[in-house]
Image (tube, rainbow, N blue to C red; front, side, top):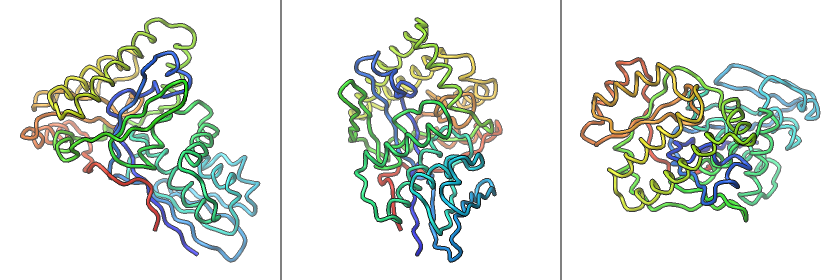
Length: 329
């Protein structure tokens, strides 16, 4: 038997980090905005005839080999994949994974891979999971793997695709698809990898601890991040592209105030190059400190922005906004 799945990564447009429980409970009206993109994570399950469980990552070249699924709980290499195989009680199979996102890119490659693997295992075991139940498994196992809390937004672009808002409130989390002209948005965005990987778990954990310890500066930053997300959502739905750019710029200003490591000299240099080429806004993806950067500007300046980023040493990532989420087969 052979099963193949894939799930898209995402660009986080606004409201990131506030989606970590319980941060959003202290900021009424909190929401995140994101767009699924066509850089996908992939999983493949294949039957074996020797009874073993083999997990192999095509991206890292690492392999885990076990005689029984219960051995996988304590494996440190390919930790997330091992824990997922343990949860689903994998038997007599090979799991092979790959991701089109660079490592540490900040575009939710690990979450997309997580959703793709969960979808593959559920199909393999012939288990039915409601979408939100599958996401709960993915989120909880990832928290076990990285040993810090995870955000809520990244699993949903991977499962559902599209452009959406995730409303975060006391009575639950609601994903609201947004009616956005994907083509208009695409032609205003340039995505690149800065060459510096980041560790979102560490960055977000430090910010979370400061917030819970009562740091007023961090609290005020999140208030502004919440308000900016609301403004960007309204602008996206209206197709007010100038206002969208202004909101992205404001989001980046507020995000940099969260912690000194959110931006770096290399990121600042790339943004300056893009701005000189006509970009009106830019921000890092994810927690910052490295990974991917996206720049926003008029369609007629897109190629100039791409050239400026490439000249600065960035790796350009071609993508389209992905309307479809988790795919099987």
